[in-house]
Image (cartoon, rainbow, N blue to C red; front, top):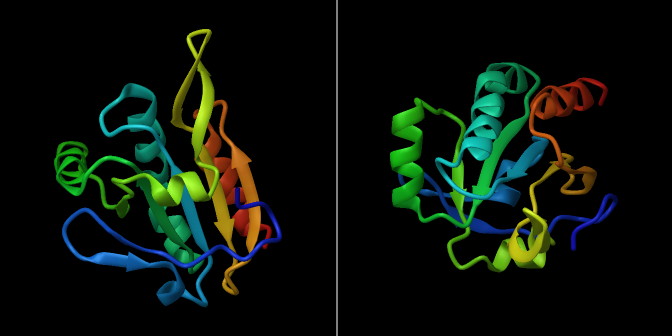
Length: 153
């Protein structure tokens, strides 16, 4: 699991619309990386749309925002087109990055223990160090909370 204070390991992942994103290539910009479960599910759609709506404010502060799920790129492409999204959506289709970073594992889902995406957001500084890690239990207002933390940097 990647914790606050640790250097986030580099990665290169495919993204919606084609191409790839390499974390280290974004330096020295800070990065907000939010993990969500599935394209099109109601709660995940809300989370992604909330970050997308705030994207101009994050960009004005020089911060890159990236969504991350295990869905394949084709799913991201359909989801982004349907919702009119501009936030980059990364595909960790094999789930290796999400598992290594502690973003996938056991969780309670309707009272049962299941394996799944652990909704979380990481704020990664321009030096690659994780400045803040949120465990997201409630989506409403979370993107605003992350934006407030970025403004406080």
